[in-house]
Amino acid sequence: MAYAAVREASHVHVHVIALWGGCPADASIGAADSAALTFSIKRTMMMTAKWRGLLAAVAMASVLGVAHAQEVIPVVTGEQWQQSSPEVKKAYLVGLSNAFQVQAAYEAANPPTDAQSIVPRLQKGLRGQTLDGVRSQLDAYYSKNPNMVKRPIVDTIWFEIVVPGLAKAG
Image (cartoon, rainbow, N blue to C red; front, side, top):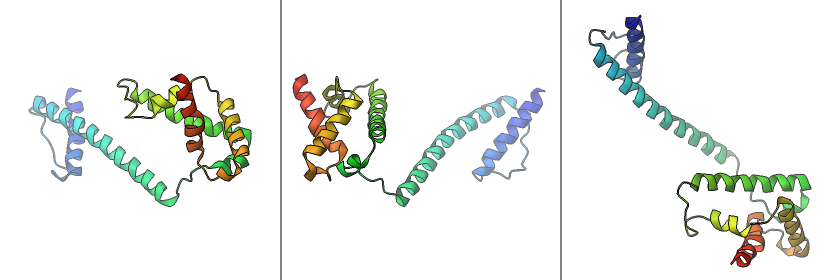
């Protein structure tokens, strides 16, 4: 039984080596020195895990790069905002909120300074705000300022809601 496991593992080892051009895929590895073989298999498996991680990252970057090359993500402005239903507006705000929450969670172990990230200022400036409150403020802003409909939503949120919120928070 132990020999079969070592033998099976040795075939995995051979195939990994074969992928990198080390030896032919049908080469046999003797099981005489099982300690050396076990070490070699463990080392190969650790290297394989590292390479798998790198390969996954490269594949993801390639997919994102292809998607980016095919479609440019538009900047949402007041024009799209005014044409959207309340549900779509809320979904947009939930998406923004989730993105910042993920960033805040990522930075939680080593919180950045205000100069390193906008997340702490964003959290402070939006303290006490609700999604419906932000939606209403954006609706009011674009209604009162029809000449600003080309202004991006994120820009409007920052300068019309977050910055005044920071001033109040002092």
